[in-house]
Length: 303
Figure 1: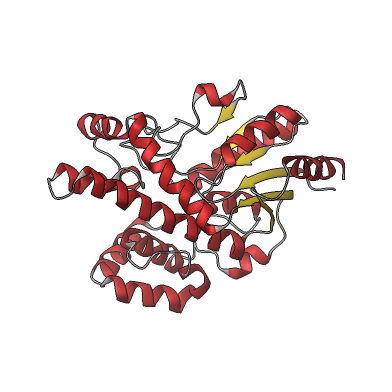
Figure 2: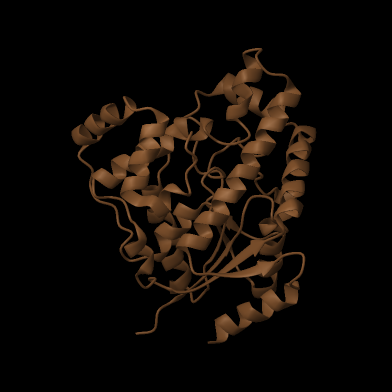
C-alpha cells in the first residue's frame, strides 16, 4: 500500500515561513497545522511571532491557542493531537500541511519508531534529583557521551532541556540516529527555507524591535500579572528575558539585545537540527523563486 502524503514547511525563526505558507495554502487550498511549540499558548502572541487573523487571509489554522500559559505541554501531546488531524485530512482526501520551526515536534510526526513509553514517575523523579546535583558542564558532558549528535542541538546553558533529555534517554524514551534513519511513516516532502546568515540575523534583530513596537512589554506584563506561567511557557524566548527588567536589574534596551541574541542562537540550533535529523529540500528565500517551490509541491502532489 502506498504511503499517504505529508507536506511540511520548516525553517529558522524569522526566515519567512508564515508569508510563504499562506501563499502555498491559498494556491493549493490547504489548511495549516502549526508546528511551533510556543504558539500553542493562548495570550502569547507577539513574543512568539504568532500569525494574526489578518495575516491568515482566511486560511484555517490548527494547533494555535490551544493551551493556557499556566499549563505544561509535551511532544507526546502534540504528536497525538496532530496525528489525529493528519488522519482526518487523509480521510477527507486532503493533503496535510505542517508549518513550523520546532524540530522535535516535526520529527515526532514522521517516524514510526518515534513512540513514547509509559514513564515510571518514581524513577523519573529519582533521575531528576540525580541530574539536578550536576553542574551544567557535567550535564553537557553526559549528554555528549549518550548522544553527541543530538547534544549539538542543545545550548550548554539550557539546563532544563539537558536534564529533560537525559531523563528521557535513561527511561528508554529517547531516539538517536537510528530513529531518523528509519523510513518515514508518510510520503513526505519537507520544504526548508534559509537565507544567508547576515540577512537572517538582520531580519531577527528587526523583528524583535518590531515586537516592542507592537506591545511586547505590555503583553508580558499582562501574562505575569494574570498567570503563573508554566516552566515551558516561561522558558520561551521573548518572555524569559524580562525577569531581569521587572527585577530592576536590566534596562529595556538590555532586554531587547538579549532577545535578539537568544533568537539568533536559536535560529542556529534550529538549522543544525533540521540539517542533521530531517530529510529536507532546501530553498534560499532570497535566490529561489516562489514559483519553483510551487512547481515542486505540484510535482510532489502528482507523483
